[in-house]
Amino acid sequence: MSTRFEEFYRRSIEDREGFWAEQAQLIEWHRPPQQICDYGHPPFARWFAGGLTNLCHNAVDRHLAARAGQNALIAISTETGAEKAYSYQELHAEVNRMAAVLKALGVQKGDRVQIYMPMIAEAAFAMLACARLGAIHSVVFGGFASGALASRIDDAQPKVIVSADAGSRGGRVVAYKPLLDEALQLSAHRPAAVLIVDRGLAPAPMRAGRDHDWASLRALHMDAQVPCEWVDATHPSYTLYTSGTTGRPKGVQRDTGGYTVALAASMKHIFAAQPGQTFFCTSDIGWVVGHSYIIYAPLINGMATVLYEGLPVRPDAGTWWGIVEKYRVTHMFSAPTAIRVLKKHDAAHLHRHDLSSLKALWLAGEPLDEPTAAWISDAIGKPIIDNYWQTETGWPILTLCNGVEKQDTRFGSPGKAVYGYNVKLIDDATGQELTQANQKGVLAIEGPLPPGCMQTVWRDDERFVNTYWKSIPGRLIYSTFDWGIRDEDGYYFILGRTDDVINVAGHRLGTREIEESIAAHAQIAEVAVVGVADSLKGQVALAFAVVRDAALTDDAPARQALEAEIMKLVDSRLGAVARPSRVLFVAALPKTRSGKLLRRALQAVAEGRDPGDLSTMEDPAALAQVQQQL
Ligand code: AMP
Image (cartoon, rainbow, N blue to C red):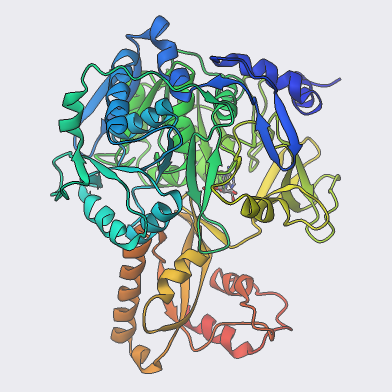
């Protein structure tokens, strides 16, 4: 006999139309969808086409009737001490003001608006205001520096960029405006306007004619009422850049209707969340988890959502848990790295707080190791639920759907395939599906991808098809680029990436991007970056560089000076998140006779493992030297 969940899952795959037509009723439509899933042009799926809706309407306006006075957005900064809870009514007013300001700056339906901001309420207003206008937001993580920002500006071609004078991290002010100005010097594209939220943290020189002050413009639109633009379900809501194998980030493009439905359904079936409850996701709006589970999903579900600027351990390791206690947080969502940071502190900081409101803690973004899961489960006495997904999918691919049926966690596994995802394990050499338990293969998804997943790569359909759908020989199937296995009960285990993407503290980085920024140093002839295991961050980037003039690395002080220069270069181009933990100087990189870099061997040696078969290697001395450097 099949379980309730198995039946639910089976129906989502076998009666796709019926299943998703039902889920579509979880949101409000100005006009109902005319078609549930148009898959006439694989792999492009058009969900709920012909339906008219609006993401901001579903996240904000829709709740005014029943919960205008209830908390919607709780913005807390332990960096500045600012703390303010906005009711749905207040959030509505602020979003209308922001929408009016953006409109006055020329933003219309379909225009892009880049958002480069710290974790402050205005960032949420800006995202929601874009959705209100049918404009496409493109949030760039505040930890990225000018080079990374410039390439995203050139790709998105925003009409307006919304930013701030500064963010703050660990008590240190991080100025944003100078980085933005630098990025705008580097980029070919020029936005019509820049809107700056001045927090009074750092000087933000304004450029006349281009830069505008949010507070002054807001004051002109205090009573603004900007109607929601009804857009087709397939209208893009946002793009979000993510790293892959090449140095050029991809703009993951998401629709409107499918995304709204997918998030609403996830709150019900995965998170078992009710309107009026409180969601606290500790991610950043610069990442997909922040888009889906700080901003949109909790609001679509009529909940209060916490937007937090600060570290988990400042002023002490009790800070998050004090928020849980104060706002009666019911659902918490974080990443394993953050828990590993907490784990270095006394669990007494957590025990000080009343966590009785909390139902569970969800963790995602990187593999969850057993000691970390066990420690936090012990410390808070709540279920810990792993979930696996990607920027591309927008919501979990693998987890436990406890809203459908309570399921047991299985250690080391993020769970089973989530409804809507036709997950397969594929033999990467033959393209055959692996149907037996415990066989290792590429985790792939048979099309159509469910609602909410990426529509395409922004302005590059070909790249979407070639990158994601054609990597497995002989079949059109979506590759996650992760290795996985499945046990006899349908629980999956993730075994790492199949490509050169690395995961540092839950942040996804492309080694190519880091290599390109290091190679920009005049003294570097060649460089290879690999991800190596790290007990705190999961992985860290390690760079191996060949210098043009060997004399430059003759002695330790010279090597250290060059290493420091390279780190600074990466900081200024990509941002400190991408900075390698070390740069090691070698005479040559290990390569095959055909000149292909032996990345896996390099990584294995760096992790102290056996590099495996080296018979194709050009010069075995190169690897020996790498070993010596380590
Ligand atoms: P991102 O697009 O930044 O969310 O990164 C997605 C990648 O992070 C996935 O392809 C995996 O490699 C990794 N990842 C995300 N969540 C998990 C998880 N729960 N367990 C293991 N790896 C994960």
